[in-house]
Length: 421
View 1 (cartoon, rainbow, N blue to C red):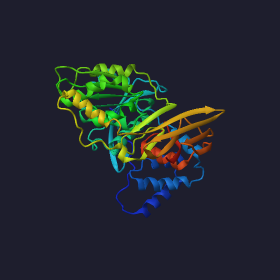
View 2: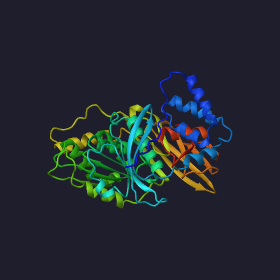
View 3: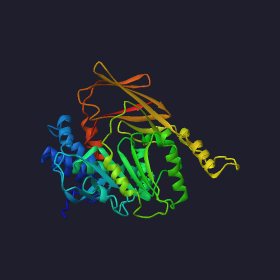
View 4: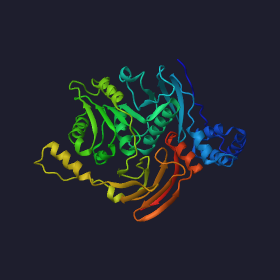
């Protein structure tokens, strides 16, 4: 078994910004690519910003040079690896398996297990998919920090292991199954699919189900598992056509909250049969239940919180069945959502993005490859205001800051535009 450790560039707890500056100045003698890697491996925001400032002062640190270095993948590993991904002061240990028999130029799907518990999927995908596990890392559930950590690990593994950015997947069991749904609903547009085992969406999240358009949802849950969980999954299946979901559901009748579950091998086979696809929709509506919902094109930063508030209590008739009462509760929350919509059109060589808001007050437009290219004429219209109308130039600070924040180096952000509605 081979083992490769991604060097953790965490600095000792010196407690001194001046020492960080000294170390940054010493890095000025490094090749540009090495200095870039050190900047992206920074453990904290302070360390990252210090190294970034020093890097951007270097001669030759142009946007074009940094973009080329950022996209340059390392030699593709094979076999079992152990890496460390820095995230907001944490050092997340990642166990990675890369198929040993693969073509050097063949990008593979990437499957990140938020919680394995057992590894039944390996029988179907082990030598055809890059798999990663984060043992011992369990962030607080249904929070932005956990969502962003999972996304950063997934993107980092895809970059380093030769993964296909259009074929990224989550899987997880129990709380990890819940997280698969929650991450995909609040960070739509990133993963191609999820395999959720013994977990499902909360009812407060049903209002976001249209965010899963284009995501292959493969769900496995024992029929004797928690009755409310089972009801939620059955209800999502019942309304999947109206929500636009591509969902398959396996419910072994005699299983509870068990591992492995019958149906998991079929789910793994379905993953392999799913073609890569992650095109930027030219017309789209992004739903949000709070700030910090993020799509590769747009990040929601501020919302009208009154419009997102769900009722504390929902009055239902005692004459209703239990199913009808649950559905009445879900309907009462459906409108507690805000949205940003966009329309992208190309006319006479000008690519125009028109954004409209329903309850979103502020956010960021992220112009990223491969959907936007340096030198391309881009026009951004917010409501009736033109906020950008020029050739797209690389912003070196944004390029590296976003790569550090999200781990995204295969779909880099060239420019970030703050907007208010």
